[in-house]
Length: 235
Length: 235
DNA sequence: ATAGTATCAGAACATATGTTCGCTGTCAAG
DNA sequence: CTTGACAGCGAACATATGTTCTGATACTAT
Image 1: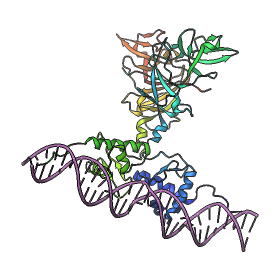
Image 2 (image 1 turned 120 degrees about the vertical axis):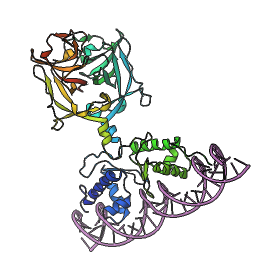
Image 3 (image 1 turned 90 degrees about the vertical axis):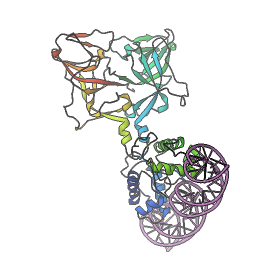
């Protein structure tokens, strides 16, 4: 009924992408439609626009409408993700700042973010390379706490360590979670296992014995441990 | 005869420079004159232009005439040269890739980089945000090892943990170092103290007893521990 | 006070730049 | 052959954006 649909990138798409990469590298400023046209031997601005629309659909670029030079390169001609020129976006992609909300102190409930804590004033933050985190962690569910004292020694966590947590109320088997024990008035970090109606809390330190909780209602999951960081002091 | 000449940067110059830096970081696209005006409470485009001219004279920015958004930031408000937009330099500044050289296994000497290992082919690397490291660590002295087994439990280091080390042959008191014990044929991580001719190796776990070495010659410092990272598995 | 300069506003202007539309040519399927 | 999707051109249009001009205000050295 018609011509076969375009499969991949035609030579003009590629030319445009290559030119975009070049210009961004050299000028630090995205080109105009007419500049692209000149560079790629496309005489009409509408045709350039035509290809830009396709590239945007394909996820290669991003455009801001009615903004001059409002083109952002996302993938290059080879399809590799392109570190955006001039943007720290790639920074934000590679490193992630997790708010340091407070301290874990033995005998006190540990700080837990409000259910919506997307806006708040972090006293300070911890920078974590994204590659250290599980792939899909959404930034706004994470927070960090600093451990004070030796109360978490059975979790192999030392005084001064930083734990990066993910806010959650339920634990899956095998996850390390922060748990508030109603009957003892204390917070601990343990591996969580639900076993025929009971809850087994397993210390990270394999030389230590688990705690078996008969009544699951007295355990309250505060969050899930994602990462532990220990900065060994310089002294 | 007239008003005293402007000396340095007025508050508006600074506001503009700061805004420029911000926008470039976040948008990756220089702002228009009107956008600058809005952001800095300058109601007239001519006034913005006025300040931009001054900033250009002062070498803070560069402008391309008759080009929309043709502003390039050269120095920031503090007068520091601004990392060239469009370079991944800022990436490299904030995150640092430490080569993962191998594993620590009980009873085997742990891998130590050759004295010059600036060029080599890392099988893999660990990304660390610079802010997690002591300020002045030079990148090429660092390497990482993964701990296998429970042999480092007395150092509060678990199976699977990653230790970031700095290559060194001598330890200062109070530093946590990797030590090869000649007489026992094993590597351990301990806090190092030299005390009247003897060496005291203190486990990180405060519940455990130190090792006292009478003859300092049987301890061989392999490196110094900078950071310990534990990625809690997802399962 | 007076003059001269720096600072600022607002408008008018010029043009740089994105958007839209009509029209043409090609090609493959029906 | 006809049709319809694709590719392309050029012009017209709308507006986003830099530039310039006139005038007002404030401040300071003379």
